[in-house]
Amino acid sequence: MTRPSPIVAPSILAADFARLADEVHVVEGEADWLHIDVMDNHFVPNLTIGLPVVQSLRPVTQLPFDVHLMIDEPRRWAPAYADAGAYNVTFHVEASENPVALAKDLRAAGAKAGLAIDRDTPIEPYLELLPSFDTLLVMTIKAGFGGQRFLPDLLEKVRKVRTARESGHLELRIEVDGGIAADTIEQAAEAGADAFVAGTAVYGADDPAAAIRHLRSLATGAGARP
Ligand code: DX5
Ligand code: ZN
Image (cartoon, rainbow, N blue to C red; front, side):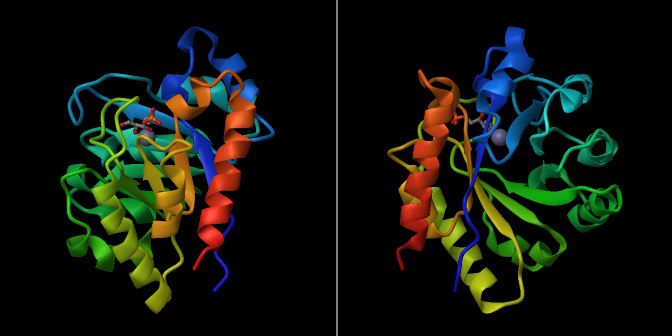
């Protein structure tokens, strides 16, 4: 079975917020998506950027926005990110009372719908929801902060979803987020991930564009192995 080509999504959480538009331009032409981490200091103990920043960034680039909402009450806010022009809007299952209804709202608003699973949440209870989603984001750290160490045990969730995807009619991007770098991306790709968020590994590199190319080539090579 041919796998979709890997998506590399640099996370601007690791960028210089004082030069945000410039930092976005640095990855243009190499990044597939731009990953934007929205945190509310309630769902996670950190506060980052919100809707006005996404609205301001939308006209400065053609890159598809991959918005990762780490917020309580996603139903209150998520459709506004779709309206702001996000390509994919991902919210956390732990924060949502009716994930399928919100996925419908997001698709109706013209965005892809993503479901995120945090470190301590099992995947099995949610497998049956996945046909309502375009993206599943499997955290490979505890959500909340960039620069954490990758947790390889969490790839077991990716393997389970890959099995479900291969055995059914599921069309789903499997995205991993947290600690993805040159020394971890291949194991994530081998497990079945095909979209890779990287903050520190891209924006902490001397040459972010070259870092993205390197990550993509590693993921492509590993994903092609049986
Ligand atoms: C953390 C965020 C991640 C973060 C990843 O909760 O969801 O997207 O930016 O950063 P790195 O790649 O540095 O682990
Ligand atoms: Zn993220």
